[in-house]
Image 1 (cartoon, rainbow, N blue to C red):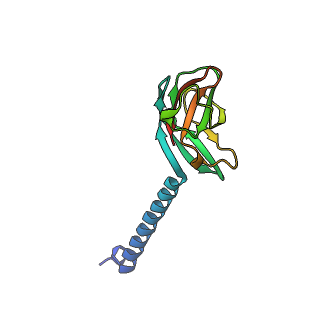
Image 2 (image 1 turned 90 degrees about the vertical axis):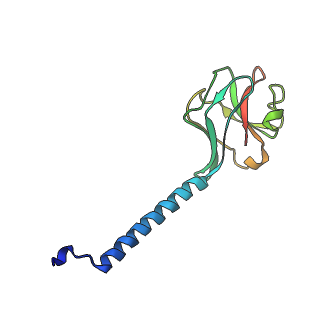
Image 3 (image 1 turned 120 degrees about the horizontal axis):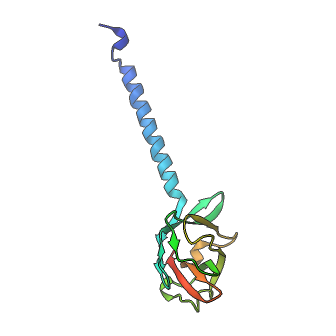
Length: 145
């Protein structure tokens, strides 16, 4: 019998151990990635359709709202992203900025983009994310958080 090709118990144990460690590492890494996502959802169109999704993540010690790669809506003037204390069902163009904070100007009407919550602002204090034309009081749409 060729001893170079012989199956030895210590080789089997080592292979099983390495396989187990790799599987454990992959499970840990995937659970860590999903643990970073604090919230996610899709959009509700009000005046216009909004496609795609969004998620809230912790990134470099900041809370970030990220619109997905497939985010898309109609372009318009003065579009801004707000966090509102009102439920999305109760928000309209006239009251969208009441009990809300402006995060920023909408970066683009399509594609991935990120909005950082200001220091001291807690997402748990808000009920919805809004895309709103502030100049003409037109609520494009939003989402429950």
